[in-house]
Image (cartoon, rainbow, N blue to C red; front, side, top):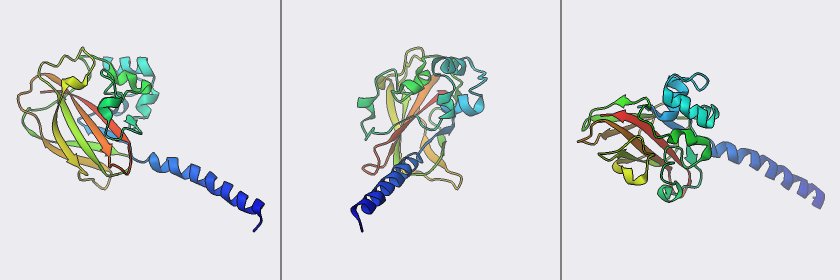
Length: 211
């Protein structure tokens, strides 16, 4: 086999590999449908082109419509379990990414789901493809002010689950007991960290709720 021929084969292999790898890494995306995350709300319950709520209109005004067509990729590809160190206060809902800055807007009129404090509840997460990982869920502390951008110090953890059940149509079911002693408007924030060390990627979900 000539050197020129071997070089040609190597170039072909590298070209094919460069096409395959991104497709694989792009498979693990998703967000909460019940209760709807901010991206799900503005993408599916409303419309990026003609949002109906003041909050979704404001979010589109900040970042345009594309973030809501990319509703399933509010992520950091190299989080590696270090989300708090990588995402600044005030940017949690948008994963610290400029593209999703509209999700960070501090407002008291984001469409919210009514929940009962202390009750059993199952979160439903629509995924474009399944993968192994850990889901850690937080809720804002009592006294939270929705007119102040969400900070890490506003949060308290109330649930963590590894590899929750997945339906045939790629919907994860995360059963939990909601925190007791909550009233009024709060944010539920979830970190979906893909299994380490297989992948460093993590996703971030913000749900507006009223207890």
